[in-house]
Length: 132
Figure 1 (cartoon, rainbow, N blue to C red):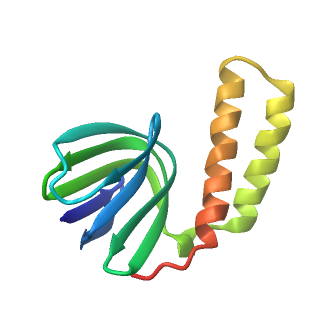
Figure 2: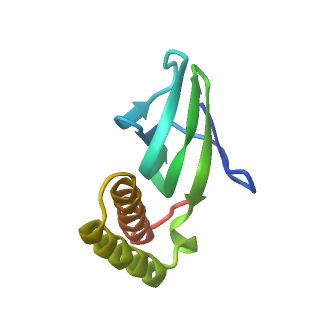
């Protein structure tokens, strides 16, 4: 099946794949060829896709996934390949988010948790070996 991953500024992936796993708003979703049509909201997390025995990874944040039996289109607000991630910056953002979580509540707490999850995802994905 065809996988396209795009942000507002660029196309990151345009490839034939065997499977895709992405962070849905309510948990991870796994897609195989022939999947029923679906429109899903993306959360923050690791997206991985497989072609044969090769797996590739991206850190993504929010957006939508359109799933068709032979095509998946991921429209992400943000998406980064492992080699594009600045790990030191992500660690600093995690530290700032953790401090904010101790001092805030309500909507600000929700934002700090999202910032922390994004930073942890970036750090995790940066450690992956992209096999494109």
